[in-house]
Amino acid sequence: MESNVLDVLKHYKDFDKLKSFGEYGNGHINDTYLIEYEGNNKIILQKVNKNIFKEPKKLMENISLVTSYLREKIIEKGGNPDRETLNLINTEEGNYFYEDSNSDIWRMYEFIDNAICYEQVTNTNEFYESGYAFGNFQNLLEGFPVNKLSEVIKNFHNTEDRFKTFKAILDEDLLGRAKSVQDEIDFFIKREEYSHIFNEALKNNEISLKVTHNDTKLNNILFDNATKKALCVIDLDTIMPGFAAFDFGDAIRFGANKGLEDEVDLSKVGLDIELFEAFTKGFLEACGKSLSKREIELLPMAAMVMTFECGMRFLGDYIAGDKYFKISREKHNLDRARTQIKLISDMEANIEEMKKIVAKYV
Ligand code: ADP
Ligand code: GN1
Ligand code: MG
Image (cartoon, helix red, strand yellow):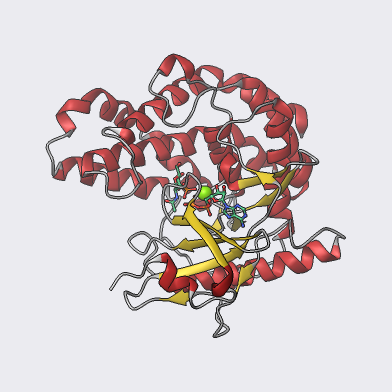
């Protein structure tokens, strides 16, 4: 039977002090709840989406290993480990997750208070900050043994594989939706070449796999309300071996957009080149030294490829019947795909400018 939040909370301390709980955040994948206890104590409870993460216990092992490692590194550097990394809370039985009778996996994190995460930046400096934070995240994990991490979603950012899956969805066209979005489909099919660039670079040993975050959306960073600085990188589900440049690229895709990821009015959507510059500066300041010349050269292309891949995933999910990303309205995934298309077009028009900016901060 599926557990409800109360059933789960009984397995954690302070159940008798529970005051309230409610859904929280804007994630597309997991179910997140904010739980409040007497004395203004708050925690985050999440149910891992097992349709997407087929081996949730391995995912939890990744997170446990990575957060313990980050904690040590942050202490070494004189930081505050209670605010600069996520901290798992054990169940009363002493496990870092709770498994219910439906085989759902739940986890609890200390709530990082007096912090905020943004769907869109309110000023350029915030985006510089987020570039620095994601770059620094890679730096902190540089010495982490990659072989200890499970690949929680196979081929997660294998764009070639994503392209094949997209074509298979089109062939199947379960709901007959494809004909109504032929222009959008053609847009991606015409750009197949983007899907090969990073696979080729890996094959030619021009780039390598590193420990990466793989979901570097702006709303996966908490900002400190007091200092206004990026405080903590969150949403660690997809930490796996990946390309450093993709962490850069996915962050640009989401955060350097003038509009929201699901904006319906496409006149509001586009690449904000000032934001691109601010993020580039922050990212390269934090981790530029550990990137190879080729990795740095490929940063603008990584923004393009991540937007191409994500757009194709949104469109594919719309055609397949909205099975993957949470939606809150009809055609939500189609709207998301259209913003990505607009962004790609904008990036194509600005690619030389993007390259110049990257060169400026090396
Ligand atoms: P999803 O994978 O569904 O995106 P996230 O792990 O990103 O879920 O969490 C969703 C939201 O919950 C975040 O955007 C953030 O606002 C909030 N959140 C998550 N963990 C914490 C935490 N430890 N402290 C404070 N807020 C958090
Ligand atoms: C999902 O969980 P969330 O909302 O941070 C997705 C990312 C996509 C993103 C698009 C595990 O991220 O890959 O880029 O939506 N996460 C997973 O907004 O598929
Ligand atoms: Mg998230």
